[in-house]
Length: 297
Image 1: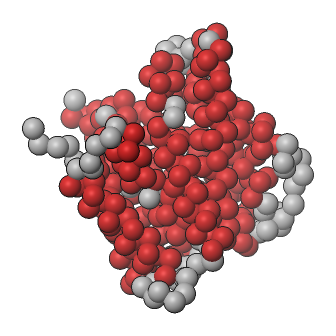
Image 2: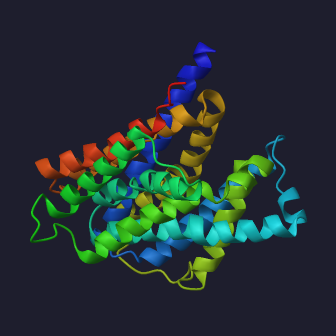
Image 3: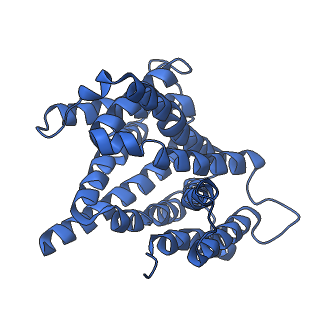
């Protein structure tokens, strides 16, 4: 049991780190190599979807076909592919391209707080004190991150703020909408088919063969990392972590994602990140810890 716990913790941290580094590589590609956001979205979803489905095909515990036998579930899968997977990836990439990986990743982590607010309205109940505190911290953190504490101006563009908050909304949908499918069919079929369909949809807006930008060894390396390590391997590591240590602890450890994105962006891409940015980031990331705490009986 102790070994499984250690392995699960390492896998969760690995997934979070890979996601954060992938976001920084995305910033490098968009801002320094002029790679089109929609093209990267198509390649990431198609490549990762194929890799996850191949993994599922060779896994004896995974059934890739059964989800297609229920028309209602197929409809839910298509909806998840569009409003969940494709939307969260696209808005996140656009937020990165208009700001930086650190800011985009941190803004996306407002998503769990949005889930709390949504569930409170849906279930017609008042949020718990810790949930109210998380909402307040998320608002303060977002304010500091986008204004640096100055009411008269934004530290990032309105477009970056829009896509950052849109990524948070998409993350909330991505988290809540597929729960029945995940319980019934497992994560690999739902994510694999969802990503593949999202990639096909994205290809109508930017085909994978419509390549642009500056291509050198760094471009190839970053692209392969995003598709292989930053998506397919990261998701598999995360799912196995959930299996070993549970969803609550895994989601808590996943808060290392914005930290890894921020550190990587600051050290490698020389993204300026001041005191107000760090305070705002800490406020938003701390909401994950607050929301992961269980109520005392």
